[in-house]
Amino acid sequence: MLEKRKPIAVAEAVQRVMEFAFQEKIEIVSLQQAHGRFLAEDVAADQDVPAFDRSPYDGYAIRSVDSQEACSVNPVTFKVVGEIGAGFVFEREVSYREAVRIMTGAPIPKGCDAVVMLELTHTFEEDNQPYMSIKRSYETGTNISYKGEDVQKGAILIEKGQYINPGVVALLATFGYDQVPVFRKPIVGVIATGSELLEPSDALQPGKIRNSNAYMIMAQIERAGATVQYFGKFSDDLNLCIQAVEKALEEVDILITTGGVSVGDYDYLPAIYEAIDAQVLFNKVAMRPGSVTTVAARNGQLLFGLSGNPSACYVGFELFTRPIIRTAFGNKQPHLRREQAVLNADFKKPNPFTRFVRANASYENGQLVAVPSGFDKSSAVSSLAEANAFIVLPGGSRGYEKGMQVVVLLLEDLQGSEWPWGNIEKSYKS
Ligand SMILES: Nc1nc2c(c(=O)[nH]1)N[C@H]1C(S)=C(S)[C@@H](COP(=O)(O)OP(=O)(O)OC[C@H]3O[C@@H](n4cnc5c(N)ncnc54)[C@H](O)[C@@H]3O)O[C@H]1N2
Ligand code: MOO
Ligand SMILES: [Mg+2]
Image (cartoon, rainbow, N blue to C red; front, side, top):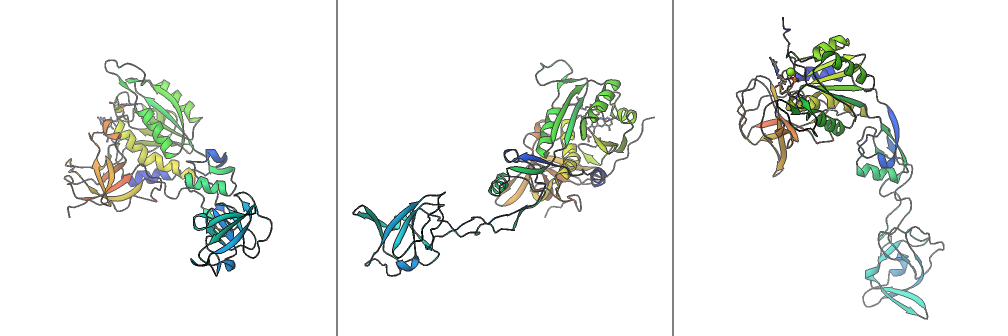
């Protein structure tokens, strides 16, 4: 007798997976390799930035007190006693009506407390001695970038778990992080199952299709921040697949398979879980697409049995695999970012289960709007390319109309959500 699968709610399924959160592990990478990783320690400032008072302009450093009498009818002349470029220090103290030619970024010479922009000076020479004159007075502090004005020593600059973007890289470099502690990326294995599968380089044959899921999942794994290990595609042969899964489990932290999780004669994943003694956490979720998504665990290691249908496979990864990967990075918001959006097209399909419609979300006049990205079947591949969001449509409605408020989950967003699954209600036309 065919076992009847009992669907569980999406939130419950996600919760069961999240109980397997990763223990964070740290590794050290070079600064050039740090972009796109997650920081494993707080970074505190061990110095002021800038570390010395410096000039924000090319011009002349002066003592402001010497400029007090300057005005348009009474220019004041300074003797130029030296020149200083960025990277050098002017050693001697500057005295009465002396000026130092200074470049942007150079330290302010001792005695000086203002900088005059080059454009506001008149320069000339007498007896080989350079001079400059100005026609206005300057207050103390004019055009000085003060020590510590950007960052003060001791401040926590970046917290552990922060995504390392180009700006974080700049800070790490500023504070001398040649080597950066980051969270280790989990290794996620991928196996495609199905006797119908050809590789992308193969010519089509009758009844066969190209294996798009494996490549799609590998890209999703990388987008989530983990490392991919691809084991290839396997035809529907139970023993071959058991061996492939067992071998793969020795080399990865998480294993994803695609295909073979439903109730067909060649859907071998249920038998594989049994053969390797993996405990099935769930094998039916009250959602579309991806209702067959199955997750099993063996010795603390998760096996994601994603659907063979491309859209179902894609959704299953983003809802269940992505957040568990993110737990490896000290991330407090491991789930897809949840936002409110206006539905920008009718979606008339009745909905027994919560539906995750592949969609394109964008801003129109400051309002997030979402529109389904195309052919909406579990088997669809075309609607995935434009999708940067899922529109979440709770089950039990007779369809949704343009203009309704809906929840969307953003796929390309780095910030994420803490727990996006509470309080997703049916929307009504306002
Ligand atoms: N009697 C029932 N039949 C089906 C049920 C059900 O509940 N009762 N569930 C349906 C749902 S929902 C889905 S989703 C699919 C899930 O199928 P499987 O996960 O078992 O996947 P396969 O049967 O292996 O393949 C399904 C479909 O996807 C194509 N496929 C497979 N692998 C790939 C790949 N790597 N790249 C691209 N496309 C792939 C495959 O050729 C099939 O067309 O089951 C329904 N049936
Ligand atoms: O698992 Mo299926 O995707 O609901 O069509
Ligand atoms: Mg099947």
